[in-house]
Every structure is written in C-alpha cells, then in structure tokens.
Image (cartoon, rainbow, N blue to C red; front, side, top):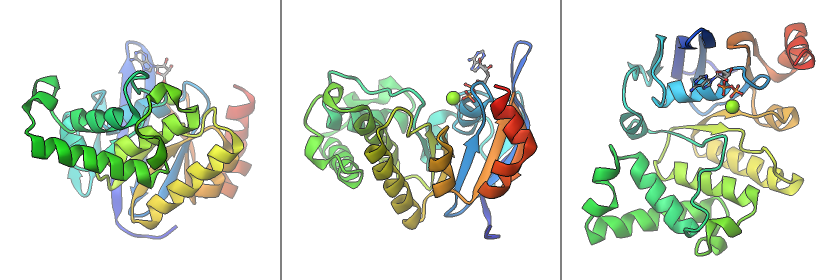
Length: 253
Ligand code: ADP
Ligand code: MG
C-alpha cells in the first residue's frame, strides 16, 4: 500500500441512533489515487459512514479530516464544494425526467445550499454550462447515446451509471460509491469496474461499498471491514478474506 498523504481521515467516528450504535468509533484512511473497499454485512454501518463523511448525518463524536482540514460539522453542500461526491445505495433518479435533466439538475442542487438557490436563480449561460458538463459526464460513463430518454427507460445498471455521472459533475477528488454493482448483470459489472479503474487512472480516490467480493477484490488493494458498527479488520484483500473474524461475520449473518 503506497504511503502517500491521506486524502480522507475518518477518526474515531461514532454515530448513535437512540440506543443503537450504528458506527462505533471507526477510524480509517483513504490515500490519494487509492480505491478503498468498505465491506460488511447488512446493517454494519457502511451507508451511515458515507452519511457521516458527506455531512448528511452529524457525527455523535469523532472527526472527519479531508486534505488535512476538518470537515466535521460542514453542510452537505459545503462538503460537496470541497470535492467529495457520492452515490446512494438506492437509485434516486426521477423516472419521468430525462437522464440529462436528472444529472444536470441533481448535480446543481447538490452543490448549492438548497432549493431556493436552485435552477431559478441561474442565468442562461450558467444553465448552459451545467447542462454541457452533465452531457460530458454522461459521455464519460458511456451513456452519451441515452441521455435524452426518460431515466425510467434505463436498465438498473445504466441508472447507476447516471448516478455516477451526476456525482462526477461535482469534479470530485474523492468519490463514494454505495453498492454500485448491486443488481447489475455480469456485463454491466464489467463495464462499471472498467469505469472505476478509469476514474482512478484520472487521479480520483474512491471509497467503495460493495457486497460482491470478487468485484471489490478486483478493484481495491485495501479493504476496511465493519460489523455491527465496529471495524473488525483492515488490510490487503487476501489478508481480509482469510481473516477468521471476517469469515465469522459473514457466515454468522
Ligand atoms: P449498512 O449500509 O452497512 O447496511 P447502515 O449504515 O444503513 O448499514 O445501518 C447501520 C445501522 O444503523 C442499522 O442497524 C440501521 O438500521 C441503523 N440506522 C441507519 N440509519 C438510521 C436512522 N436514520 N435512524 C435509525 N437507525 C438507523
Ligand atoms: Mg448500506
């Protein structure tokens, strides 16, 4: 594992919901240009960890440091401006809007404070730039031919690619992908893996939540394992796969 500077440092991150400890003092790092896998059984705290990093959910305690500066307590829009982008576990496209409109409007709203400062406040030049960027990112993920149809007409794999395009409009240095391969066909998974490798080659760092172990193993050289909110293992894919605590967590689920 290359010893370059950490891009993201999650320090003793904790999140409780009432009596439930969803994320239990978890620490890990993502370095520049690295793809890190975040795995664990359902309910392990993976999506909550994404929500903590992106400011969707406030930390109960702990700290998130990005590019050497704390981002703890910043709003999701401020964190997006620091160039951290994410996709959600469940596809969030408006099924009746075109793919292009979804990507352009969604990306714009995420980088702004709220609906009040949404599309209404834009002049024509800004609007044209936003749509041009959305089209460029849709081309990048391989949906150039499909951008003018309704999102509901896309396959699940294409919908997930559109969500990645929307995240890429924020020009991220760190991209968080929450189960991007779930429900995809084999060929769609291959295309997605190729895209993630391309993004890394372009210098992006990726934090990848994924259940398909082969998919994770192929893409990452470092994996963090959560179980019931706690980090139970961390290391190279082969190490993690052979770790008795990890085997137990998966078989015991
Ligand atoms: P994973 O993504 O690893 O499947 P989650 O992070 O979604 O797990 O959930 C971790 C735990 O936190 C689960 O027990 C879940 O029910 C709980 N949880 C997540 N979000 C909330 C919330 N907003 N309110 C209450 N409990 C939550
Ligand atoms: Mg989840």
